[in-house]
Length: 147
Image (cartoon, rainbow, N blue to C red; front, side, top):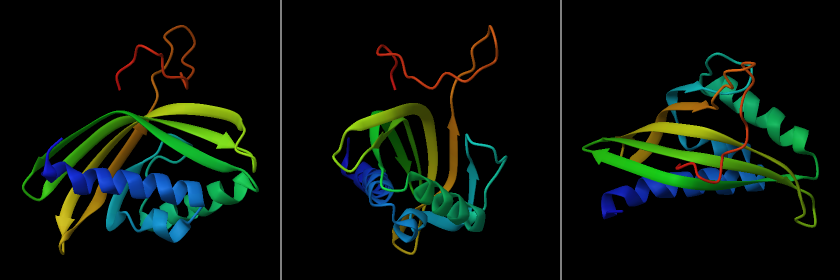
C-alpha cells in the first residue's frame, strides 16, 4: 500500500480501537456529520445521530464483554479527496479474560472524503451473502474467501 493509503488504514485502525474500547465518541468521530450508513442489522439507513444511538446500544449490550474486530483482505483506492476501503471484518465477542465467546463476519465498504485536512467516512455499507436455499444470512467467512 502507498503513503496515500495510510490515512485510510488509520481510520480503520481507529474504528477497531473504538469498538474494543466501547468508546462511542471515538467510534462516531470517524464519520462525517452528513454520513450515510447502510448497516446490516435492522435499520435501512442511519444518519450520524442514529449511528451514535446504535453504537451506544451495541456497547451497552456487550456489558463486561468486548468486541475484537479483525480486518481481512483490506483494499483501498485513493483518488484526490475521495477514497474507498473494502474488507471483511470479523467481530469476536470476548469475556474479561479475553476468551472468545462468539463471532460473526460481514463485508464492509467505506467511501471516505478528505475535508479540513482529514479523512471522514461519508458512506458505509455492510452486508453478508444470503444462502440461495433459505435466504438466511451467511455470517461466517469461508477460509478461502478474499476478502
